[in-house]
Amino acid sequence: YTGKTDTEELNNQLQKLTVKHYQSIAVVVSESDSVYDAICTMFLEDVGTLFVVDKQGYLAGVLSRKDLLRASLGRQDTEAIPVSIIMTRMPNITICKKEDLVVYAATKLIERQIDALPVVKDAGGEKYEVVGRITKTNITKVLVDLANNQLF
Ligand code: ADP
Image (cartoon, rainbow, N blue to C red; front, side, top):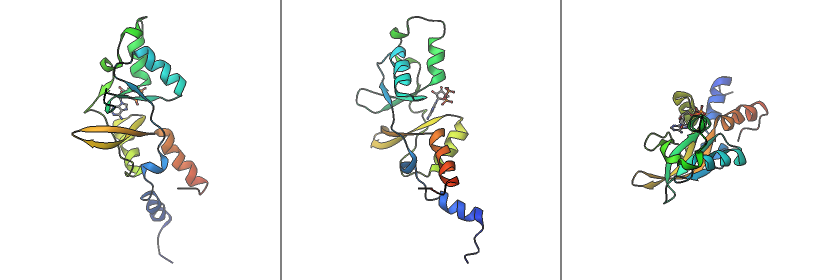
């Protein structure tokens, strides 16, 4: 008998779960796309957060549901507004890496009161490639897997 309490054992399990085990595919739009295009992509791809990439394909911004709602309230010309003027932009984006603990990502989501983090790969020179997405839904899956004794 190891003398470990149930919570210690659970804690040990959680220290093994990394973002790569629970991440989803990232949906990205480009900086020059319009608010209209982004809204269409959000519906078609069925996601709540879009990541914006620059011409070289590196992370440039984040668009939430409310960012797009705010930008389109009371106007008809959403095709004329590029997402680059309304997105939350780098370097103010909270990111994570695929090797980070799921608990680290969850802590960031709570601290910053946001729904999703881009999973990135460092490309050097403060540039990041978007390789995935981790959301509150992915975090909820940890709880469900735990209940079903199917933790990764
Ligand atoms: P909503 O705005 O639909 O409630 P969020 O709570 O995720 O969705 O987003 C709140 C604000 O934080 C938005 O302006 C959004 O652009 C920004 N945001 C979302 N995700 C991130 C992130 N990973 N890093 C920095 N800012 C973010």
